Image (cartoon, rainbow, N blue to C red; front, side):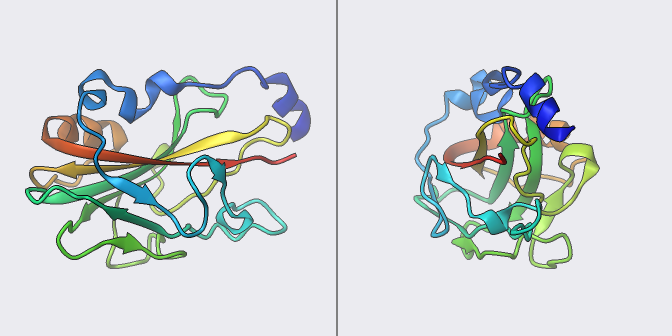
Length: 186
């Protein structure tokens, strides 16, 4: 049944205009942050362990690291969105806020769990906290997973949801960076 749905909705994808990085006020901000991973390269397939899908999947977050954060940054926010899910807008897999730009340079593999006291999550899709890895519908083709980092000029209060966070964040963004992973289930 899942493969049939993937086939049925195969052309229902590409909600790029709904990505945070494509909001006009955000798109104008310089993309000077270098966002990388030792687990996958930009525009390459993410590790099987990063997915919750069985049998290889462990829903283990990949390692993410960053450089070139502006000196004046007071907070970093890391967000993962999938614009290829067959939904009206991209699905948000996680939101991490409150990252200290002065002391934190990476998040190691497996650390993006809701029970980690050193990471502050904001609600993502369906109000979920913590990392929720790629799990595209079988036979729907390759999905892009857009990791986005934002450097902010001030700290954010805890939002109720992603939409509230984005509204609070936009006037504070001073720089941004993007890393894209892909994932497919056949």
